[in-house]
Image 1 (cartoon, helix red, strand yellow):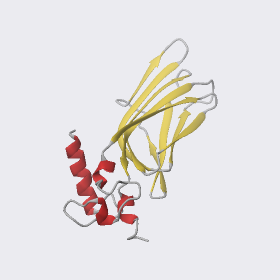
Image 2: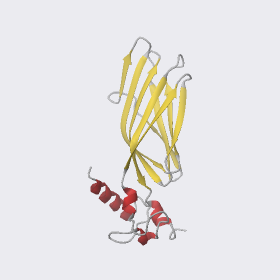
Image 3: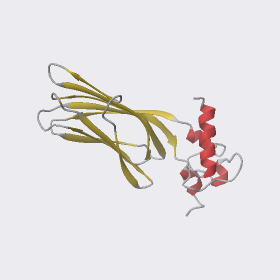
Image 4: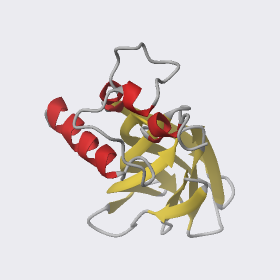
Length: 186
């Protein structure tokens, strides 16, 4: 997608209040000064610069010696993480499957998002040592900056052990809600 298209979409959402928590900013092409100058932005910087998506990916490796395990990673302060794709690869004992969930927080509200572990988003291959499980899913999940994304993974059986690798892919954008908060919403 062309960066100008992404900027236009984010600008439209910002003006309508969708990305600013219901508070739309005034002006046809609002500059930072419309909502109060952001301390970290130079006086001439427009808020759209902070909204240009930055690619993001993070991989976690988890041991499944017990039946389940979890790990977390941090979302950078002042950014909004948009998770678009999650892939999982794991090795488990014969006949077992993997169950995976992401837990995120937006506006102080936590939610758990479960991956589908059925075809066409999952595959299983039997090897001489056990089963190799692959999961993948396109989704749209958000996580506020300064919070942690939690990945929970479990096996469907209680015997044996295993391991899994989870990759989370998406993009970071500046949290545009902060542009209108300073000064006006206190």
